[in-house]
Length: 479
Image (cartoon, rainbow, N blue to C red):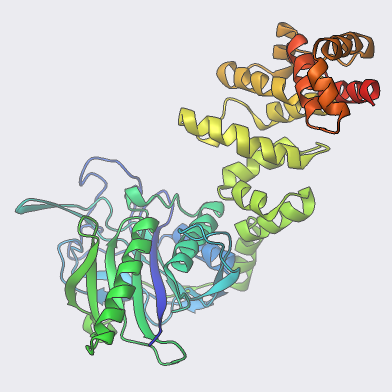
């Protein structure tokens, strides 16, 4: 019997704000343990939370970027549970009336395995806002709790069970991360805990519409880990069913060293958390005026930018996918390509020369020593025939090392391309006279032999002869 997987994801993303969601403590990473805390985020009795308007606004931005319906009325609820990371023994969250409903995330490009993805939209269920919990650290037989993270605004983005393969889940996570980074909602740094995800997965016979028993997987610290955990768990569930066993709803943890999942606990249901409206917080009303104000501040989504790059600049889908992977790269390309006759050439240089060189140096493109304008000026020199493509690579390396402009380097080192017909004719004649074998091979019909003669001329000119003129003059002599 053939089986298919049904996958849904719950992604938790910290929202970039100056302060926590219900108190005035700073929302920052890297402070000393338990230094950004106060009686409110420590859950002292008798304290009252005060809502952070910016956290709500950023959640609305995320909803609009994902095409969600924004609720005009939502409220806060208490989610009750007993763990050391939540000092109040409840988490302020949203249950039945979240801020954002529905929506979708477009996926495209390639999955983790490198196989092309069919372009489609992954449906969302909701996006709601809640407070993050403290960070627990376990060392041997002792544990420590850092409450700096407790109370940081946290969005939970819940997808529909709309994915069928680990590759689709991987592509979805990358696409969602791009949307949130473009909108400047979060840095989404998983190493800092700013983005975490839980996976829900079940399997069922192909053709069956009824969902299988859902298994939740936790302890996923990267998109790659999520992909590996899904591959393992799907295979495990299929093996259980084929051996005549049955699944029970449970939560499992992923072990990176063992590359396997193991049982944590049987899955809680909503009633186990005993949700009820928080009596200390007023409901949130999103007016039409406020919603329109937020909508007017939206930036272009990655998906829309990819489509525009292809249409506006005439680049390929692959180029657009690479250039929009990070917002900073897309911004760099747009500035470098502005006013250029051949934006495709700019795209090629960024992908083949700039990104590779920056990666070797461990430099992010936003800190590139070669500015977009400087790269554009180098493209102008190539377009004008001032330098050849080969010489331009040497000039570019010098620009990276010194930050000097392309024009200054070319002038200082005398690298201007020779386009004087008289000067090149002499070198062409010398190449023909000194390479009788290559000349004869060309005349006998081997067109590639001319490249040997071109190389001879380029060597004689120290790479400064205009290659196009060299080829034309050689052909005019030999033909």
